[in-house]
Structure formats: structure tokens, C-alpha cells
Image (cartoon, rainbow, N blue to C red; front, side, top):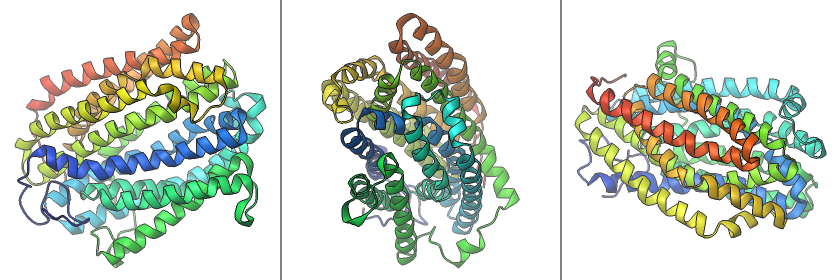
Length: 464
């Protein structure tokens, strides 16, 4: 079946549910989204490679010191996007495009406001935040310059991230892929150019990666607006969407009902990462650099797992909007098997080529050995993480977010952080990474229990 970018995966526009086997629907939806997430991650990865190889380990540690803070700030808008994409999925499945525009307008307005607040307060308190994290003194000046630049760019970055989430609500994973491809290409060109001063550009040192990132997502946003307007996309920036750019109270309540728990969960995850980074920093800048390199490798495994979860959530929301709740069980099963195939394959690749992958970011043999050891400790648990994410994603599609979110928060706050500190006292820096498998296994057991014995017996209703 030929499908335009504005047609939802798993649904014919204005028609009945797609008659194709679910695994094919999943692949059609998932393929561009996984590739898009890989491109998004690749932009950060290549920036880390350029910084680590061209400026050294200290520079990489300076960039890595900002990772949890950026993740925390992005978490503020991920919750909004998660709630809005579920509502858009249900409205699109029910064939109500006007509601799609109303939901999108509220979400974009809220994301822009959040970005402006972050830019103002984050830019003012950057140095204090990094000192609070116990950033090693030898990298603090460089880390501060990089972090402040990224903070000031938050309004545009958050709106860009939000738009990619909203597009997936109508089943469009192709347009975000194009925009991420452009963003990655611009970033990869400009980062080394800013480092070396090519093409007459100023030499910006560690801040080069931040400056390149800003230009890249501005270009991607401009492309999104032009492309969607040209294709008459259901989320194109036309008069109807511009009129909807306000915070509609009724829509806001629905978005927050679903998105706020997800946002809180993301914030708790980011706070946990900040706490763990502060713990890692106690072991010196080599450990901080290893932390950054391991995160980059793990991202390539966990992002596809999260993409499978998002696909399951959007397809579930569309099914509920079309009054086809009977498809949810098949969606869950397909998502779990997709996780085995995709995430499992990436884990195997990660173990087979771990030294080469870590070596992309780090030149010090000692730090490579440390990072490889840390990666081996926790990489396998990404498969368990993917299982738990699929279950919580489908439950979120029905609006049932409080208990799955509470389970995740409990596992992170009450299991991950305490166990990391306890194990670090006994095994050193390796103990921090032992906490991840413990957390993911606990999360899967609790999510599966709630899904099997409670959620499956709940009455499902459309929210819009």
C-alpha cells in the first residue's frame, strides 16, 4: 500500500483499520522512527567524537557534565508531547482533524513557554548547577560555556523536539526523519568547522558542539514548516494551526492528565542521572569521560527500544480512537517481539564491538578499558528495559498513566539511586552501573503484574 507522509501508520486516512499484519504495520511505522532517533542520537555522538578526538578527554568530560541537565530540561517538554501525541492519535483515529489542530496548538504554546522559562533561569544559574553536580574543577570553565549556550537555545530546541512527537501522533514518522537528517548533516558539518575555524568561522572550542546544534535545529524547524505547508500536512503551520496557538484550558487538562505523569517520570529519571553523575564525578574526570562514552553507546540500543514503545502507544491510541480495543493485545505482543528482534540484535553488536565503539569517543587506553567494563555490566538489561517500556506505552495510550508512571518512579527513586550508592561503596565506579539491571528487572516485574492482573480488565474509553 502506498502511504503519503500525512497518512497514519496502521490507519487509512478516513477509513477502517489497516488490514495488513500488525508486524508490517509496526515496521512501516517503526522504521523511519528508529532511523530518525538514530540520526538524532548520531548528531550528539558525532559531536562527542569531534570534541573527544579534536580537543581531548578533558573537553569530552566538559561536554558530558552537561548531559543530565539537558536531559532534565528536555524532560519538561517530553511529558507535554507524550500526552498530546496520545490525544492526537485518538482524534486522528476517530477522523477528527480539527481536534488534532487544537491539541497541537495548545502543546506547542506550552512547549514554547517552558523553553523561554528554561532559557531565562537556566542561563542565569548555569555555573551554580554545574558546581552543585561537583563537576571536576579542571573542566568547569569549559563545561560552563557549553552549558550556558545550550540553555539559551532551549526555546527552539524544545519546540523542535515537541513537533517530532506531535507528528508521530498522526502516524507520520517520515517527516521527522527528513528534518532529523537535515539537522544531523548541519551539525556534523559545523562542529569541526567551529573547532578548527574553517570557512572563516570563529574557533569556539568546547562550545563548538553547542553552537552547531543551535544552527542545526533552527534549520530543521524551518524545513519542517516549509515541507508540511507544501504537502498540506494535517499539522502544517496554516491559519487554523496559528489560530490554535494558545493554551486551551480543556485541552490542557487532558494533555496534563496524560503528559504530566510522564513528564514527572522523565524528570525523576533525569534527577537520578544527575545524582549518579555526581557520584561518578567523585571518581575523577576519567570516570566522567567514560560515563559520557558509555551513554552514547547505550543510547543507540535504548532509543530503538523507546521507539518501539512509542509505536505501540500511538497504534494503541489510534485503535482506541477507532473503537478497536480488540487490537490492543496483538499490538502488545507484536511490540514485545519487535523488541527482541531489534534491541536484542543491537545488544549483541554492542558486546561484539564494544572496544571499537568506545574507542570512537576516547583516545586514552585506560579510560577505554574502564568504559568497556561499565558497558558490559549493564548493556544486556536494555532488553528488559524495552519490555517494560512497551507495556507502559500501550497502557498510556488508554490514558492509564498514573500507576505505570508510579511504578517507574518507584523503581528509579527507591531502587536505582540507593543501590548505585550502596554498590559504589563496595565495588567502586563499576557498582554504579550494576544498579541499572537491578532497576530494569524490578520495573518489568511490576509493570507486567499491573498489565496482566489489573489493566487488561479496565474499561477503555476515548479521551477526545
